[in-house]
Length: 484
Image (cartoon, rainbow, N blue to C red; front, side, top):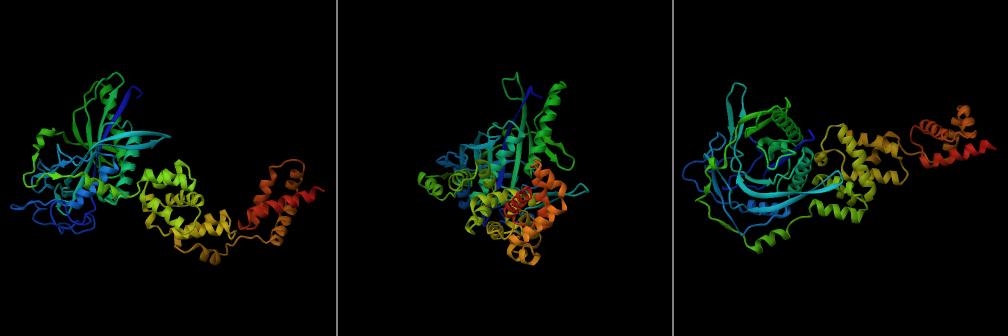
């Protein structure tokens, strides 16, 4: 395997969050939840006599993405007809961009294993989405044209990605950028963001790329990683056994964990691109570009710099916080509630993420969980005030997850207040020491580590609610008194 190098180029298709479709005023609806074929119009259905009108909001959204990807925005871009025949493409051609795209020559910097790598972005171009096919068990297919005509931005990388891990890092970074810009919500389960991976391998003695195959319509980053690994392994086995690799369009069978050949690859000239005669070229002035640039929000890399500078978090912690906009929003909402930054980071990346993992809830769903930023900020405040200790706080977190109640209310309801009364603590400690004479004798004879066991016994006797620092100090005092 070490003789082979993986070569990957990614094509990412992102639906843009406009109210209407790319070339008509027909509304954009949720293609999963809306009833089939209820958001269609003559242009969506490709009926004769219709004329497309460019959605300029989609153009500006695409420019925002291009700028965020460090792309050049050419002064002129143009739409073209891409001809192919498939049931979900009602016109028999797709309006896309070919030789004059909206954005070119950009890049994304990814962080992996403590190192930064630059992945070049070849182009980002606008087009219209197709409809959606549902394949029935009897061999028939149903078509829903609600999605037909929705603004779609295709982002094409250069073949600079050399592993599935790099592909994952690139995809997560790109998904975050789209979310931060507010142009795509990133819900891959609904098909609003789809990945296609062009995969090939090179032997260490090769001087040129070998044949690539394209894995289409990957609807989760996890599926993309698994599909790439499976395809790379297959290609290497094929070459090492003396076989050949033929260009093909592939699918990924998630349930079976295997690659499925869908059809052998078309050539670009088979699409018969030519300029769309019904849409004039779009001239993009430098003033327009700068106006769009001025409205860009703070993006993930800028947040990393700010978080490390202003809040004293590590680079790793900052990158974890910004990898999804919902996580960054949750963190900043906690700060607005008065939570100290370091404690907010520790509780988010520690207790909260652990609880979410145990419940099999994705980090991007943090905005929909019962625990709110205000609740977690109050939990931190209770610990800092000495009302509860960290052990109790973790227990409380589980109750908050299940009930959605504020921690202060749960503390009273469940009787979880921390015990700091020195009289109660001394009495408990004396009871524990009297019940464990051998451990006490061992400690006094020089076995210092036994104090941890005695501390555990004391905390258990206090049902985990003792003030740890107070118990530690009073236990040491009581043991020293017995030495005399």
